[in-house]
Image: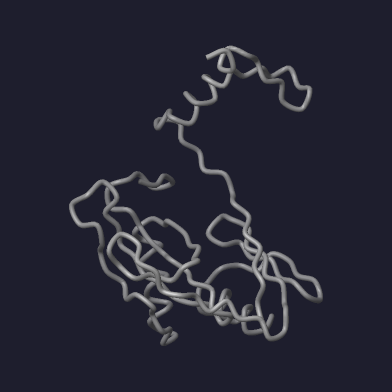
Length: 170
């Protein structure tokens, strides 16, 4: 294809990439590097969100303004914007023959960190939408998984792949 032969100049830099080399870069599983992801959500109560994310889930607040708060969500940026009365109550939808909250977001963690988060949630009597367990048994994407909700109703999936290297996903 002609498009794969064309060079793409990024930000007027001296770096030239072909689409084929970009594809190869993403497929190189030996040199996988995860980049931080940013997610921005509406919440109904900033103090309830702060309590949940820092005291229960155990993540760090990085900065805040009068109407928003930014968290380090396991290496990614989670921004919560306060909108009084907002509810994100998820619906349950079948995903791979199982009802899970949709929409939802989450993190794929090492098993050790997964266990720490699970124990924190249990210690704070957090209600699990889906209790901690292993799913997709004996597959390449086998995982320890649990689903919870934040105070505004956002579904959160916390998982740890059993067969994929830490920092990757299957």
